[in-house]
Every structure is written in C-alpha cells, then in structure tokens.
Length: 143
Image (cartoon, rainbow, N blue to C red):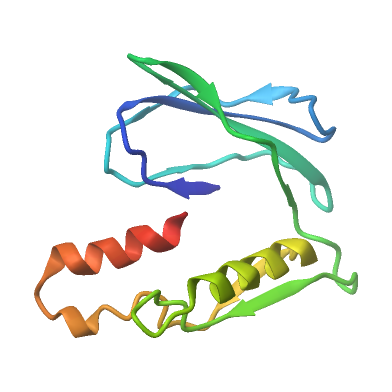
C-alpha cells in the first residue's frame, strides 16, 4: 500500500513485478482528487518476495510515472530482517534540515523492511486550533 496526497486531480495506477524494470502487473486506474489522501491496496502478493514498482499518473496536462521503488513481503518466521527507528522529526525551528536529510539517507541506505516511528512526528499541539499550520506539518512529513 502506498499512501500519498496528490497535488492535482487525475488517475493513478501501480505497475509492479518481481524483476527490476519489468512490471508484469498493473492495478486498475483509481481516481485522484487534489489534496485528498489516497491508499492503493495491492493484493495477491507472494510471501518472502522482493517487488519493484512504479506509480503511473495521468491528468488533463499529461502523464508521468515515478522512479522505481521496491518492497519485500513478509519473511518466514525466524528469518532475519532489518528495521529502522525514528522519532521527533517534527521539522520545527529546533530542527537542522541537513541533519534530518542525512538521517533519512542513512535509513534508506540500510534498506529496512519496515520503519518504526516513535511519535512526536508533527508536534502540532503548539498550534492549538490553527488547523492550517498543523496541516502543513503533516504534509511536510509525507515527502
């Protein structure tokens, strides 16, 4: 499942397969509404398998697709796996953007099977009822 918030309306599908650059299956097109989060569920995947995928986007101004990404489905009990832990990435005035970018690069380099976020990601309680400011903190983390 890939969760994202599109900046424009259109349709999206996911092409995926077990060989890099060879996407043997594509999901049906799903309608996107700009600014509305969307989750695309992919079912029927094999256990303990590496998959490669691209997201295909079409709108009134053209079409595009993302770079290739990958994920690995559940490994058998007892197999080794890699995970990463992140916390307090709230991107406020006390955050060093270069240090945070390096942290994200380190996580990506390790190629974890999953990421555990310990929370305080958005730290929006300081905004009170100012929804737009809180929303910007959530959106900043999605990228």
